[in-house]
Image (cartoon, rainbow, N blue to C red; front, side, top):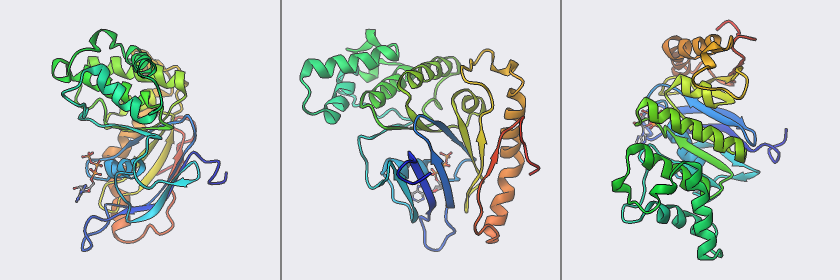
Length: 287
Ligand SMILES: Nc1ncnc2c1ncn2[C@@H]1O[C@H](COP(=O)(O)OP(=O)(O)OP(=O)(O)O)[C@@H](O)[C@H]1O
């Protein structure tokens, strides 16, 4: 597939914050197709947020390229919506005003009623119609996170970048918002790149999972294809015969294999390395 047809292509990405230290990550190569939901998992400090920030255009890589729809990513753009763990809402604005503000920046020529209608549509999708006049300080953590998600979706970005958006939520709220996210993504065919530390969250939501080895010198070690059929449900997916092969594969990586590659990378033994593509339960190569 040519670069022009690939939705997002990341090639040879590396990042060093200090000249006298090894790079945080190097040789990062992956692709995302339009409409794909991609999760990235790896131990703390391997550089997941840095990669997301490069895709958002908020940070420059030391080398390599990130190309979205044939254009190099250079600086932030309303084509990419970002949701951070801290919701970053404007505290003096109501819920509705926070979302309208984003809509107005994307669609500056729209009339006020048009902007409000559009914002309300996305607040309804995340179940917040009754909270539209509240200020962020009057909301629970889960509600704030929903406003962040509604705001990101309301600008109708070509790609949504989620940095552990549910990390600070209790399990029950997290589950409800995961379901809402799945529902909206299904309706809008949204392309998503999401960081998570939660293996079950990745299995529930993703089409494929990028596994990063430990940093420094972190790499994308494996691209794991989600072999569980679509239409997954949190309450029942563990009954699927593909669930445990998938889960065990991911946990084994985090516990055992994530450090092996780091040692090889630090010794310079990974020149020309390509990530292994794995289909757990169908085709799991010897590691
Ligand atoms: N602005 C910065 N200046 C210097 N070092 C930085 C900067 N931002 C990140 N780092 C370092 O880069 C490494 C990767 O950080 P990053 O936040 O991308 O990792 P992460 O995988 O997202 O971690 P976590 O899972 O803990 O959020 C860390 O060692 C961090 O200390």
